[in-house]
Length: 226
Image 1: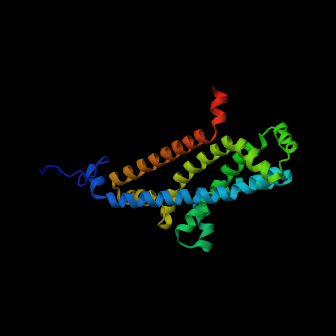
Image 2: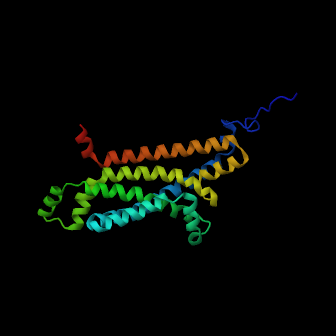
Image 3: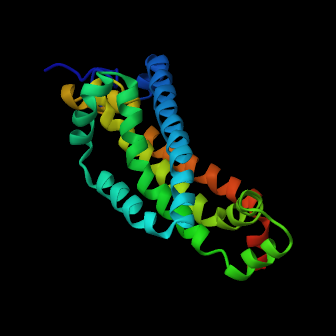
């Protein structure tokens, strides 16, 4: 009867300190790729969603089509979405980013539009009476007042992107999803658990960071609560 190996990697345990010490560089590379995919997709999504929400607010007839299209995009399963984008982007990180951007549009457009619609009409009229043009009104009155709702959408979109980025493992660009996918195929317990926990940590940290930014840039909401 042989004694069990002393190495937790050899025993294939779920929690293994040796995995962290021997695979540190692999984990750091995966985390770096995961962060790049998430940040880039959310920033591009925000750059697209903001003008769409503004146009939908300015031209009421456009709100229905914009919300309908972004909602339909969000209902497409992730595997199907990546397959549809494959002829355009090929097997690349751009394929994953494009998919994440499309998924983020629903959350971002809806929340930004809701924030803009929540701006009191009396406030708009007062600003116009003070000589504010459309652009100045948008930048100095409407968008600042819409920030709480917009930031709520940004937080949800970011956390969703952290989660959905793992699906990019099917094309080799999934950040921590690559480790989860490979670990599940080989039943490498420590790798699956470590990569999964890191995904949760990234999601929670991103949400807390954005919550802190929201707290800093919306001081009037703190005064209102007080």
